[in-house]
Image (tube, rainbow over the protein chains, first blue to last red):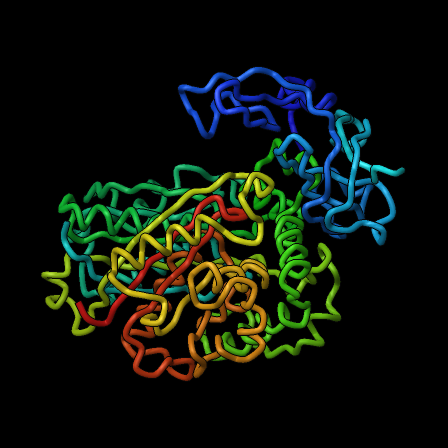
Length: 132
Length: 390
């Protein structure tokens, strides 16, 4: 799935939903960007911690799992629009039949996946229904 | 800029070619195209090859040099060879680079090829290699798969526009029907809507029959300046437009996930360059990596109103004999999807159609054809327009 440093260097974003915000135009970015897509070199980015609440833009129940996610199959994957503006891709934990477009969600800290039996275990943010 | 023509084409058989290597299939396609054009190795000024992931599929990089070598273009002729990569749009982009180099006057006779050898690894490893076309760190690490990303497009398309699983299935049914008439197609069997709906679910609402297969195959084209094209062939096919556009690598960063803005922009640029409108196009090869992708493509290219792609398909408007035949080759679904070859194969199909050589799948009187090749979930789109007349 990934190398240790590749995952480790983003721990702040993966554990705590840290992204960035452009001081010039006010747009929020998650995952963090170093260059604002609107202002480019004239923008100035500062780190920003998202609340984590948002709603489901779209979702799917994945039956044929991605490599490293076989144990979790089937699992719900969704695009979630955070209240501050940006969208991200994450799993939503809960009963698949209760998921719907527009459903409010909130973040939870969960195991994401693992590199086989002896490999690294990855933790990070998943989402659950806001009323859960 | 000079006008550019295609003077030779060739596809290998598409399918699970276990007895053949990457180099075997590219050489067959390249030599076939060169013979079709009636040129010889010493006429060739440059070679471009679209290949998505030789590194993952056959553990081989430096594909340009490998192909030039085994085509007999290296040791004596030292022809420059360049590999082009844009995930599943690698082939379309190789063609675009070849067109640009001929149009600029830098080179005259140029080969544009595309190839992928995907069955030397198992299907899990192949899927993981394909997933590298998405954002590995922010989609892949969350558990996204390619069918999963397109399933989310489908889910929202259905929610917003009322598209149905039956309409999606009609894409696969049509493309399998077309594939029956294409000698190189991976699948030459008819299927029904019921077959699609009863096939296993990969990522809801996409069934396995909504997905293009894993395929080995290679395709090649020979390009020449339009002014000299008639020296080589009686039926040169002219490039009227080459256009390309980018969008965000991750699906979640798009303005609207049911529209591929890169396709919309590339098409707009292509129509403008060719001075044509969607109504002028007689047939189109679109990037149907999933059935929903064909529905979005015909909308984004201007052949159907946004949200009506499913209805238009179910009405038969995209069938051979319909208003705008789509994927006469069988598309990625039935002809197969050797990722690096696909964009070039689409052009081979359009050239074959415009020459009038498409046999039972011929679109009568076709004058203008279009190809639409997509990388990833829509981060790259490449659109070409071809014409029978200069």
